[in-house]
Length: 151
Image 1 (cartoon, rainbow, N blue to C red):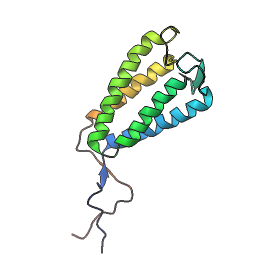
Image 2: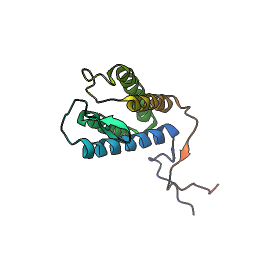
Image 3: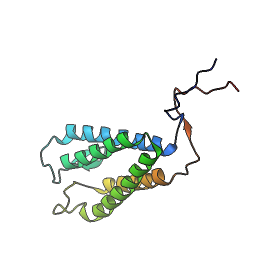
Image 4: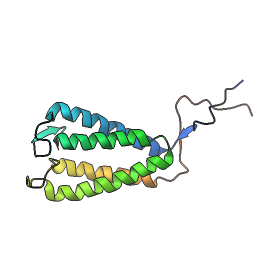
């Protein structure tokens, strides 16, 4: 006799949800690792300290941590994953524009951005648009789900 999956838990995950989970996990990890490099000194100033070529400071680490934790909190439902996508698109789109002016200008560069950060912010904004607009008819089977084959 086949076991039916719990009807309250969805049996599939949309690619938007999985992308939100992946981005959330990566940004959470980067936020935590960043503190091992920067500590809490020069909280909102250029530091010339980098993680994988991306310039960071403690404020930048907190932003990564907040974005990552938001992804981890919002990935489980498609509607909240799409909201996370719009937040990524808007936030990182604005960060990209800000970075075009701030990178290399210590007077306004309170997030300690460099060119690599700008590229990543643009990619993150595009990923946010993908999360928000991915067609709803595509799903990925959830791991551990058992299909009902009794018919």
